Image (cartoon, rainbow, N blue to C red; front, side):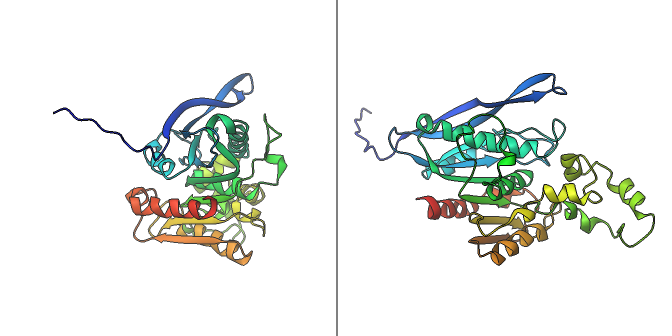
Amino acid sequence: MEKRITPAITSPQYLVDTDVTFAQVDDWFGHTSMDLKLDIIYPENPGHPYPCIVWICGGGWKQMDKSAHLYYLSYLASKGFVVASLQYRTSNLARFPAQLEDIKAGIRFLKSRSKRYNIDTNKFGIMGESAGGHLAAMAGLTGKITEFDKGDHMEFSSAVQAVCTWYLPSKLDEVQSRDSEYSPETETGQEELEEFIYGQSSSESLLIGKNARLCRDLAAAASPVNYVTKEAPPFLIFHGTRDSIVPYSQSKLMYDLLQEKGIKADFISVEGADHADLHFFQKETWDLIVEFFTGIFI
């Protein structure tokens, strides 16, 4: 069969640029350097800037893969966004706040390349899962805290205007509190037992380099709940009601604090969902994400 068609041009061509170096950081005990990279999906439509959504992969701050969710991120891109997935240093390479510094460096880099990728620098959102949700929340809540801005492109702000989190660890000294009945404040000698139980093996303890249950000042400095102000951007928060890794109460605490400050926030309880299960990768979930960012930016 021979056939001719003349498709109506209603959308731009979308391109994927992978392994783009956005920063260089110290490696191997400060003796060498490593490139931090990003993947980006963008519409080739010069002169028409689009909102940019930054994705942060989870993995307990111990592992991450910026390319793991490109399939789902492409769906978000198809709805009218530039979408970038950023690499960050894991906890075996650097302690907090290095991870947050990396994310902010990526945001500034993207703003510096706004013409290249057709990005509207005034319309940035950020989203992430688990450890990535923690970093997304921290980035969203510290837009005006310059101490976390390190590296290049300092003429650009790392502030974002909207945040979406999945199963968010919001208060690091209590992420595992439901797993133990021990309290060093109430029984003599329990500090040693807590140290034995938790040590520095928990994900949040590895992140800060100390036992998060005992060194609460360090845990507090890395906890999003301690950065909530009346200037916080809007939040969309997802959490499974049967999460076995990050307690459901962690996201609820963040939502309640945002409400107290008068911040626009929506809390989506995903019924029956465990940590990072298939409920979060269904079209219904992603349509809610599209609706959230569209309502703010488009």
